[in-house]
Length: 236
Image (cartoon, rainbow, N blue to C red; front, side):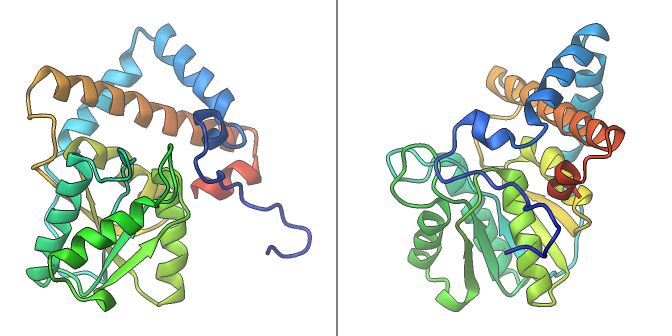
């Protein structure tokens, strides 16, 4: 429910397609990102690639209120190797006392019949983590919604500090989104996530993430340029 006179914040439906996940302004900003990258001979993407590589090592942090495991699309209703590595890394941080609770994010995506968050919860329960230490955010369809929905949970529980857990090459984009939402966070990479560091697949993923990061910043700039409160409400 929204206050009278305000525009509802767009959320993608369960099992959303790529186009449904874009939301207001998403297609235009995607086109602008492609055009801008092409006209400047890829320079913006290479600039973002440097940020992706720097963020892959994470940063130092102290104990926080929450560990967030960012969701990952399931395969045949089961966690992928990447998602398992994220979950296992979060479990280690919990055992080390870096936070008293884990939030697993991820809704119904693709053709799955169960949410990413619920599959992640079952894996942590099977590792002996107490149920009361595991929370789920099972409505989101992508990283931005993961973080946006978690921000509401943090505010509702007066929690403030956050440890973001994901695969190394995802952290630059996840961090940019969290920063845009005004969150107090640190990044911790799940280094066991495939692909192998330095492999062709690793570099391909790095360039892909660099473009997505470029797209995000293009979208923010475009939304501010046209002063779209509806678009900025999802990003800030």
